[in-house]
Amino acid sequence: MMNRREALSRVAIIMGGTVLGAEVFLAGCKTNSKGVTFSKEDIAFLNEVAETILPATNTPGAKEAKVGEFMSVMVNDCYETKDQTIFMEGMKKLEAASKKLNSKSFMESTPAQRTTLLEVLDKEAKEYQKTKKERDPTHYFRMIKELTLSGFFSSEVGATKVLRYVAVPGKFIGSYPYKKGEKAWATS
Image (tube, rainbow, N blue to C red):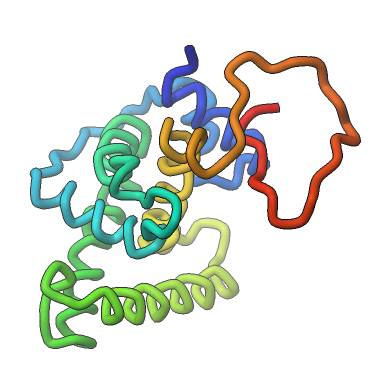
């Protein structure tokens, strides 16, 4: 059985190492970071942010995959100190942006208000990436979004209820037929 670190390593390989700190993930999440502490409220907050990014529809959402807990483990165990700081400060910035845009906290905002806020932050992060120099830090919302996607699609819920999953892979068939609208494969 594959553990979450192995799964994330595979995601990093598939994504060409574009996941923040992919080299750390591939090395087994051993960093020289000081570690951070996430409260239950922080994890609930991250679950709601992740659920806004990947909401439940006719398939489970990020909250069911416990993506908030995944983020807390990955940031604590796999991020360098500077990236942990960016992530933790980013949670505060997201909350401040919610209060500025919606006049209430993220947790008090409606689903529509949350979506609008995250769309604004996503656009901001994309614009930042366009002008970012190599040594500039990663935008906090990009970190949150990458961890949401990685955590969800490497979870049991994401791999088995959203993607197609075969527990024991068979032989490789490079030209396997795919019909438009079918689920993507979680295994190869």
